[in-house]
View 1: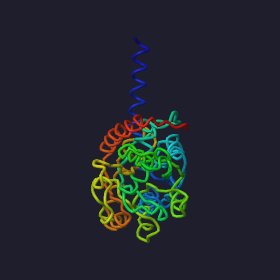
View 2: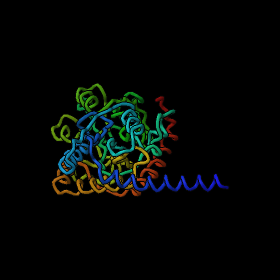
View 3: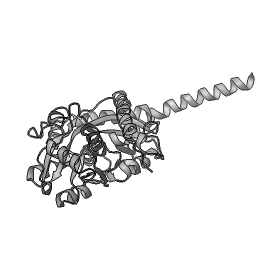
Length: 327
């Protein structure tokens, strides 16, 4: 009994000490440069968001805030790096629907748990995906595309910025709802996929509207429809896929800020406040809206609920389509 009482006292001391250390860490944070890991190539929506945060935080915090692009395996390479980093607030991740709600069901094995190995900080923003085709295809609307695909099974190739991304799953959802068959061509990011689309090497591509809008506006590619239930204010002339004969079609790309698991609550609150302050700045909102991104900072609890519901939705589609990938 004496040893048990002594052990309990020691445990209480440790808990008290740790409860004092965490707020102290938050009070002195940051002392060192902060890294924001983007799991795709530069220029896309996750990269845009990371650089907006980095620019704002660097001014307010007085330390370097570095954006590092670590593309590959649908975001898994960069996400693993963050998952295995210290939970000290110095290594953060621009999380995606692919990393946290799709890859867990899609990949046979993963080196990290997309939910348990991360601390949710805040939802950042969402953007519609858009279905675009190369001009050489001679297709101008969804009805023509479906007719062509049904007459030529597996002849159309569709690209995405990686297996497991919402862009990949947009194509899977299209095949399921339209009853067509296409071949998926995964890329590391838009920097590789868009040139192949423009040149005609692939037939079509699902991309974030924020990334492909300049090419659509210049006429280099043809936009067939956005993947949200309502048209985007950034491109109101582009119809939804839902209104063109696929009612209920919805596949939104969303992005969030994540840290390694077990980040002290005081640091979670600090980072959440920083994120909210940045995304609520009028000039930041204007910039993001111009890129077809809708900022919507939220609490860690709200982000957790979203991840849970999206994991169920996309997990069902992965299972129904019989998709499984090697890591």
